[in-house]
Length: 532
Image 1 (cartoon, rainbow, N blue to C red):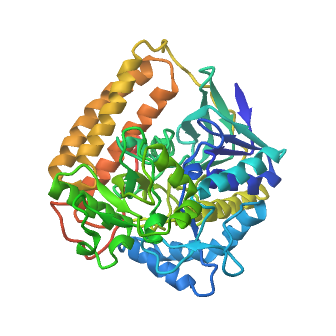
Image 2 (image 1 turned 180 degrees about the vertical axis):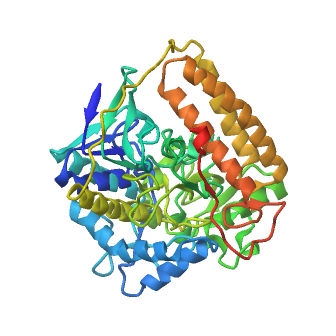
Image 3 (image 1 turned 120 degrees about the vertical axis):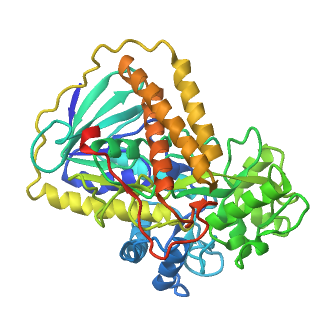
């Protein structure tokens, strides 16, 4: 099947849907999403969205907090751009119908504080902020006559002029999309494509991410020739519930912002030993401190103690977390919660400019799939939703400008050619390879790294890549096979980036290079022409 649309959006989180709504007045929009439309990392975001809307706060303070968390690797121009446009972007969400919690003391909003922030500036809807944002954006997209939402479909690869061997600079032309229900691969032709596929947390065994987070956008962007930056900086959230049935349920950093403290099994507060900000230190410091503490004691977990907080306040401020913990047998108002770090957020991704455009013309990227320069070596809490909506708006403005200028219509694209691929007969190989990649990444490319571990991971990934490529071309596509191929590519990029960084900085902590280099440089990878 061939589909033609003015704008093709891959992903349905805050970045993809915000972009879709803003460009829909200027042409047809197809939004492709792997599962249900609301299934995105945005939907699981608990804490909130950081923006300066309080007179006691300042843009400069938010800038300084972001730069400090980013460990010298943030692009200051990007930081200022995002934070200066933050209030406008937040009010845009409010105008669409997003309901953030109001203050019960004065006019305005109830603002939370999280690790690394010097002021209360996190707008939230209790502890399911992302769900509220996603609800409104999905509803508005469903109501718009120019937007078509396509669920249960996964992008296989981008189509570019380079891929087709056409002359001149590389330009995106569309994408191949696999229908998960029918197994059919359709050709989507679009002069403008937005990558908003989210992160890649499923590359690790323990993650707070939904199952869809298999790094599809980064892998597709890399195969298409886009630059990929800073993949070594993977943020591990310090506090995920440690329970066999919890599937790494996230305990929001906002809990510590409201007074929760970390203790070891002996009941001792340990964070003051690691950082003067104690439990409100940035995530990389807290996660690493927990990792050190667990290695020192041999314990399986540490504990988040909220018992000094008012029980009624806990229930009203964190209703979702309170209910989920109760479901697993924990009353967080009366007993400390067992917690461990889990893979949470990729600070690297497809490199973009201030308009959200990659180095492939008309291919934009926003949200966790992108590396804009905002986060540097470590993301400041609650800056992710902010980045997603600000860059979605910037990308939309640039895309709209091109629709009224000299936007070239893509040429006819070749249909997907399955070649001699047969029906898959050994799905167990996909599952086994998937599991091996995730466990290898957790054991060798986790919170604390070494050259020896990274080299071991690199050798194993090379072998797995050969197996996966053979299987990929021999058998018809399934969603699991597409995700496995992407997962292996992302693992390869993370390891290669980590090996290239000969220092410890932010989220990248290596025992072989414990010092931080004087000059901060980005790690940029790009597929060679010969490998395309």
